[in-house]
Length: 321
Image (cartoon, rainbow, N blue to C red; front, side):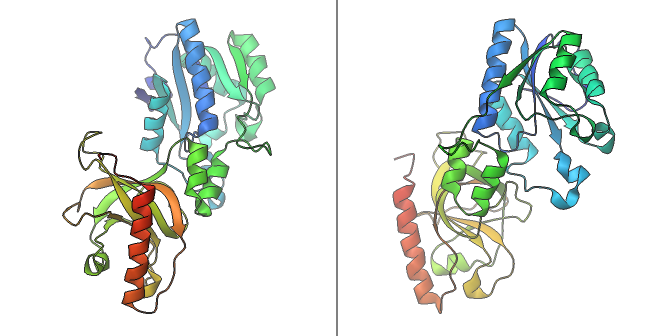
């Protein structure tokens, strides 16, 4: 997938396009429905399917105090967009200058002049332009003026109560520690990626050596607790031995040891031979096993950790066996 970082860098030979615009945080199942329709329309029109997204999140620029946690970082978002089938993504740096563009200016400069859109796909709640003054009706009017079709996709409902799939819903599930619900909305397990760094090595002393992720790990960290999941080594080819290994994952401050720093650490089940230091790994969250508990002594902690590992082993079988 071609990644374009400035409007001026859109290739002149990109050809006609079918465009969808959004933040795409998490690229959840609602986003995926939009992206599928973009690819279908593009194939029908012999056009390029293109996504337009923003970095940083617009709220982080306009109202920093209200900025939402990011479900994924930009690189992961781009990987998910590529998996959807779009052939190019235009990543616009969101600035106050961009926010001040009128709907007409934005459409003319981005969709018409640079992307030569034959169609724009959007949801019913699409808003754009200065102070979100543009909506679907605005887009239709501009499409009529400039020769592109506007295709509005109905919301994809997440449940019988008519809650739609949304990034807000995914964030709330992660805040609640409900990684199973987050995975249902995302269409895949939620992940956190970071470099493995040295910790206090308490896990090794207790017989459960853990890979500790650096503080700058990317991906929204779910609620404190113990989880079943997998540790993935992206530097190894998919399907290779040790590429994706069952793990028991701990998130929190280690209250038994009076910890104060929140960490993410993963014990690869039944493995004590791995040297992962300075390696970038991805942790997949499959199911929450329990919340954090303060234990009165090492022995009850080890007993509980053994039960956690047994449960994680059962929930997350080794894919190579």
